[in-house]
Length: 98
Image (cartoon, rainbow, N blue to C red):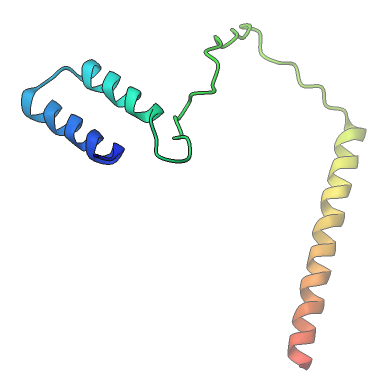
């Protein structure tokens, strides 16, 4: 009894030698994918829905920025940056002592 892998190779070889149309060989390969000798085969994109991409309006998105919200975010950013520097310096000092 031949394995799925050897059957797939045979289909691909026949397609290369005879010039068989891709769609016929692809259909046979798809049939073989369903037949496995253990775990189910992974079929890329099998669970993706064919949903059309919604059209975006021509008007660009309006981004609202006010000084207070920018200041809050920057304060948090720089606080974290300083903490990271302090930790790095403490770690370097421990390595120098040890």
